[in-house]
Length: 478
Image 1: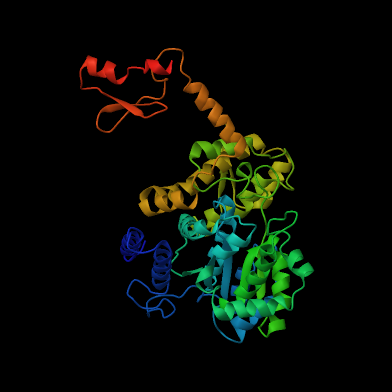
Image 2: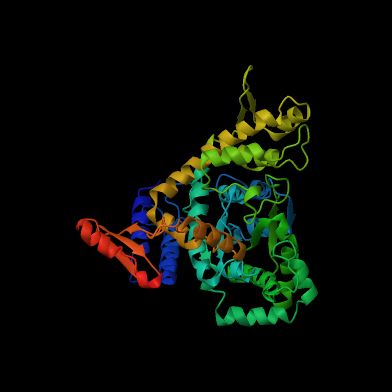
């Protein structure tokens, strides 16, 4: 942590606790403060203008080495020649953006893009992270409009904590709130222009793997991919980065932007790792993922129940997590050398530095699900410990969590069950006295006993006669 970061945290906490500022203004001020800090070093000089004694990230790499690093560990790259042109002909750092709709609680699958972002930073790229609050609202109303701003703040906390957990400085990141520019007149006009060029069929196809698919879908699901296309222009980037599930939206952007006079961008895609149950890891399916704030005992329970067929590598979510999270994370923390240790009961630990050897041992049953899962559990709990320590040390983050993810209201069926349970619990067992559960101690020391007419009170400090008088039943009502 730099000498400025404690001061930054104090200033953020001060803004968060200022009740005179609206929630929207608080978020905008916090984002501005973070971004100002991200472009300024500890001596107040812009990070891009390094002092004589400092080395800019990626300055020790050739353009070819930078390109190789940028495109490493990806599933697919579209138009890498755009990045080559920036590196070779324009002689500058590529500007990349990664966006996330602020909907469900971020899970450990987010470590996959975070580790790739760490690679981009190592290659000297400039990195923008879009907190796509309006996208979250558009995606079949996944996030109510009154919650998206709180969730954007929560996401920023999680993302910065995850990057710190793998030893990456967040000083060179720029966070951008989608609604800070997506409601502007120019953006809306360009969105309308783009809508005249893209068919309903193409917009629906583009969002098929990202936007929630339902019968009689809302029009918002068609606007979503158009906005993601337009964000490339308004964020001023050379490259958009995302998961392989974004490919159809990337293809739409590649074709759509030139139609309204804007240049085409490159696109980078990381692989999608399977969830714990074998399907896609999703924030909406608690059994498929591990929340970054899940306590160690819950992480252990979820991984113990996770699906991992013996000797099968393909579609194995646990092995994919080792490949795309634990090995790269250990390399960042261990100075470049990946390390994954599997303890054995009656033998020396198995120590791995590459996924090929892990796969070979798993296929040969040298490494089994029974030994793999505890090793993954230990490594992941170690990785999450610093994230959870940050959460426990941040009253602002804790408060934001409550506002971003309040307990959901009971469904009609759950409400009916709760009412029956309460009625049974509070049923008068035949005596002429308040039912069990109705009498409650009040702050002033009295005891409240509600009736149909009013709430009678018994002063515990009063006389027995007064108490009996207050509890007397109206015989006329017999």
